[in-house]
Structures are given as C-alpha cells and as structure tokens.
Image (cartoon, rainbow, N blue to C red; front, side, top):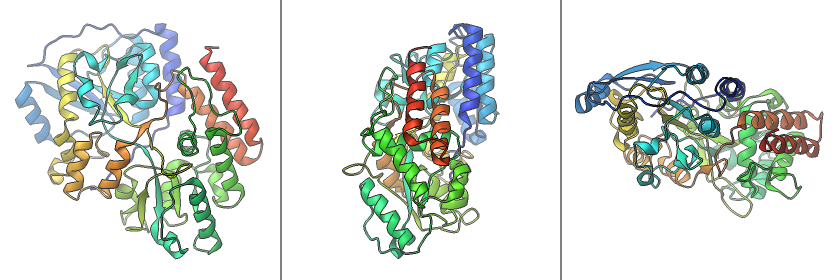
Length: 441
C-alpha cells in the first residue's frame, strides 16, 4: 500500500480563520436547522483528497438514497472556506474536515454539529483510539477520518553498522545510540529535528515532552514546562543540545518536517527521526521513487524516561457544519465512510480498484487489523499497537488559542536553536504566551 502523508501549514491559516470567526460572529456559528431528509438528498462533501471510487459511492447511494457531490480542495483553502461560510452563515458543505488542532476553536465558535446528536460515539471509543481528540466541552464534533500520530523511525541498517543490535527503549539509550552512530562514522549527523519556525517544530517538541515524562498544558491551558526538571524544559534542552553537539545537521535550522523526512531520512543522511509521521515507511521510505533506503527504515516504540512512552496524535476528523442543508444525511455518510471495511478498502486491503487516492492509515483498529492481515500495511502490527496506545497532545483538547501558542513555541525554539536566545529564555517566552492566552488577555 502506498500512503501519502498530509502536510499542513496550520498556524497562519488557523489564526486568520479564527480571528475572522471571532470578529464576525462573536463566537457563534451558522444557524442550525437543516433538513432531516436522508433518502433523495444530495449532499456536498468538501475534502482534501480525491473522492472514493465511483463504484463505492454508487453503492452508498443505492443503499441509502443519498447522492454525494464530492469536491476536492487543498487543506489550507478548505479551512478558509469553512471559516468564511460559517462566519457569513452561508451553506458551503454538508460534510467537511475537522482538524485536531482546531477542535477547541470550532467548539467555541459553535460551527459544527455535535456528532453525538447523530452517532453513538461511546460505542466507537474502543475501536477509534483518537476519538477523544475531537471532544471539547463535553461534545464530540467529529469522528477521526484517519489515524495520524507521531512515531519514532530508525534506519536499522545504520544502527546495525554502528554495532547496535537492540533498539533503545529510553531517551538516554536513544541518545547514546545516536552518539555511537556518529562516533563510528556511520552518519556524521544521525538525528533529524526540523528546526524551521513552523508547526513541525512545535509538534516535535510535544512528542519529546511526552518522552521526557511531561505534558505541555494542563486542563486550564496553563504551561507545565517552566521548571528545569519538567518534561517540556528537558525536551527543549535535549533538542537544542542535539543540534549544538552535532547530532543534527547544521542546515536543519531552516528545515521543515516534510523536508527532513524527504531529503534526509529518505536519503540515508540521518539515521533516525524521533518524531516522524505514522505511515511514512510505506508511503515514503519504502518507495524507490522517493527513497534510497527502501527496506531499511522501521518504526520502534517511542523511547521514554524509564521505557517506551505514548505516541501523540494529530489526526484529521470529519464533521457536519451547522449550515449543512442535510445534516442527517451527512451523518449517514460519515458512518459509511468511517466504517471499518470501507476504511480498509480505501487503504488497499481489497485491491487497487477500491483504493481512495491519498487515503492515509485508517482511524479504526479493526480496519488496521484487516490491512495487516492482508499484508497491505508496512509494519502494520507495530503501527496498530502504537495507534492503540496513542493519546491526544492536550488531554483537555486543543485550546481555542492553539495557533498563537504553536507559533510562539516554534518561533522561540527556533531562536534557541539559532543561538539568539537561551533555552531558558525560550521556555519563559512560550510559557508567558500560554499564560496570557489562557487568561484571555
């Protein structure tokens, strides 16, 4: 199976969209009250990927009487259109994207129907580990459309060349292994960290914070990383030290997450990416057209303080805007497109004729199991286990001011890496912004 990871430039888009929403609506969205009609309804689905196979959509129409009009829009433009339609209280689509980092904002703005109104989400929790990422204020505003979570990848051949036969399970072991790879001359810069001031740097820091035993924000949005003994502080120090000590290429100061994966990890320049994207082995590293390390890169359980730790999720969800014309029909479609067998088919379990182009890894464990059993998911058993243990970046959901916080994190961590400020100063600046934002000032 070939998987194509999605790359979002969230910060600028989300900040603008939310500012627009708050300015025009005063935290209220489009007027609810669409038709309860299902049979005979024609719904519009606005999405980032091309549509599922025509035969699949025709089968859905035959079984439900609902016709689907599918519109493909790039991710950034899609977010702008969602915001513009909601703030003007005009119809845009019946079904569209709900990104994990926007859940707090969308809940506050009341732009989407609670999916609980139509679907029993409690029954889905066990099979959809990332469902909680779409819950805010006691409401679930979307179902996870796919599974996306941060994982650790290593070039097993390079590790072996350095004499490392057992994969690390702690951060100290992981760091020592990287130093050994460098000392043995296998790779002069074995670690990939994307230090460009962008979202990828923020999410890398979140995963490293988890690995060092910490959390980023508490349930009230207060910073949990100000103490030098905290996981977030240690993570930032480890990341900057890794660059200064030569484990990370100097050029990474301006490298984004996707650039590091495509140009460094996929080319064997580095030996490991601590916070990589799930699915990259099958979609990038094992594809001869994009990689020189095919068959050499593997996922490992992410190292932590005393042993392996959780993987943090960043999935896209699927939901129903408040201005939808046919919300009930939209809900039936969401149930259908997130059904276990359909997810597995879209990802390649039943052959190319049923594949949905660019569909990432399924959000259901049962669908991942089908793919793994069919041999259609690279290291599927490992990915399924990591998905089962994945958890949200923020336990209470992404705050409504997430874009501003993420921008502060990436900007200040980049500055610390450049050397224009200390790690201590960077942490203080990020914490001050979180405190300001959480206080509503």
